[in-house]
Length: 525
Image (cartoon, rainbow, N blue to C red; front, side):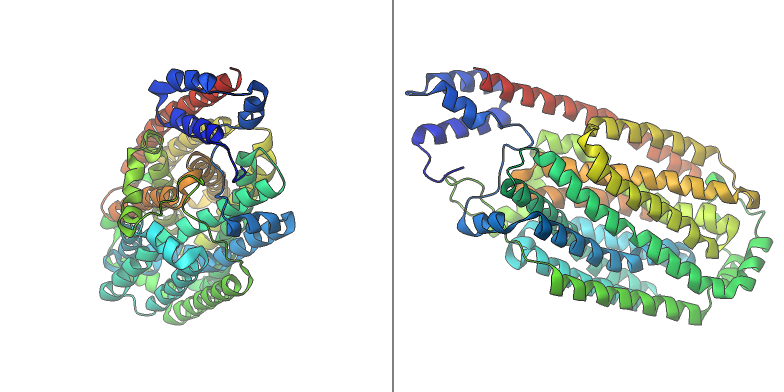
């Protein structure tokens, strides 16, 4: 939008924004638009014809942002998305693999899952500071510092005690919120800049595409991390076979209760399965991956600064206290309130996947060495599905259809997990279930991220901080009750939350459609 706008155009734009925020005054705003003096109807149509709920808010028009838009060619946009995806892939190759092993690698007194829970509790707290941190230190350097802390957490696993892993996990969590807020803000800003550079009206599709590419690369971390785990742990194949044979009749699947199964015999078996030298080798590889992620991010990723203000007539900068409270203020938005449960569910299912599925189903039945191959299947399906959904399918299939299909599929999968009693003869079924979980994960990751990016373009940092807070809440709950509840109870909790989340999501889609219809009604005046 040009900087030399007339007072009538500015008034019209303010009225349009007010119509989105105050539906009860929509008929008043429409009448005011018509009554504006010297108002040319054809010009009005050309001015607001492209205003929809997905592209009403645009990037700020300051010189630095305009220069970024001019330079944001397709090659540069894709290069930055791919570099960011590769950096996250290296970091999470280490972290996801370690996360999947925590419940089996450090089983004594639940120190592994407790350290993971401390990470997500720290993430919840850090989300309050995320907008302020990103504004002060930029998205790039927020991510760099967090990657350094990740590498320190990997090093802390050389000495797996409560006083070591839980504080390190909490410190990592205090920067994990800003990390993912910075990542999502970077991807969304790159997508918007490229859309404006290429004069593409469908910002929703561009954001979905770039999120799909990023998530596809990021999710391959499940493949590489678990490939490393498998190759290293299988060096002790004789001990693993002994474990599988001795414990094939253990209560596995939905009947499994971690607290009831922690006994001296099981601890002894796990210690012989993953000996000290193997742990040292795994953790050293994880640290190497952390260093690679840091180097890639520093050397190859371009910094994209983004102003907080969105319109030339709004010159007030947010104070530090306002930025601190901006995440909390997001919960006053009815759209955000309706999205709470669906994001919490994504976190709960992630926690279930990496804590309960790996231990109660895979490790309990097949042994620790089989965690890697099964989780590789999860990662392969998840990453491939993210790319296909983001790049191809999102152009032809609506978001509502994706989420409805994913939720229906997910309910059926939870029923299978609740009824399934895994045995040694069920090896193919483990890969099928992991692949189905990967498909559901791809749908939730791409669509929920895109939904937040589209609905809250004018306040990205606060919106994605809120998203990460809700996601971390789900993960913290899942890892926190992992030690105390049986798997059957957790599956029932997941199913209940999913049903409620889908209902609330349907409400927000109805609200979005009504608001979009109102914009079309104004255009038709």
